[in-house]
Image (tube, rainbow, N blue to C red):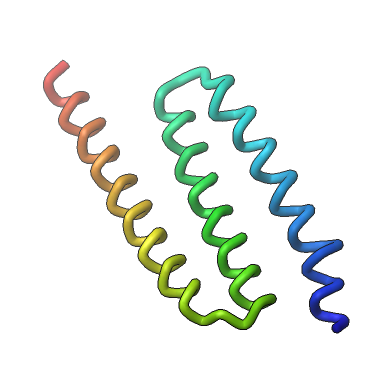
Amino acid sequence: MMLNTYFDYVILPILTISVILTFIRLFKGPDVVDRVIALDLIITIGIGIITVYSIRTQQEVLLDVAIILALIAFLGTVAFSYYLEKKDHHD
């Protein structure tokens, strides 16, 4: 029971505050790279929230969802980095 209280009153509020701050960075910008990094961080925080929820409810299936989401986010970041690299060479 102590573990659920710790999740409810410490971990989830910290993750919620971090998502709010990251959304501010996503909307504020100022550059496209900043927005992509903010979006990647939101996905990473979402993975953390899914993991915490999975531990709290003892549903191990959600960890598979978190791993798949992490792989998709990684591939998206690599693809964007590749795009920026090609764009810089053509300019």
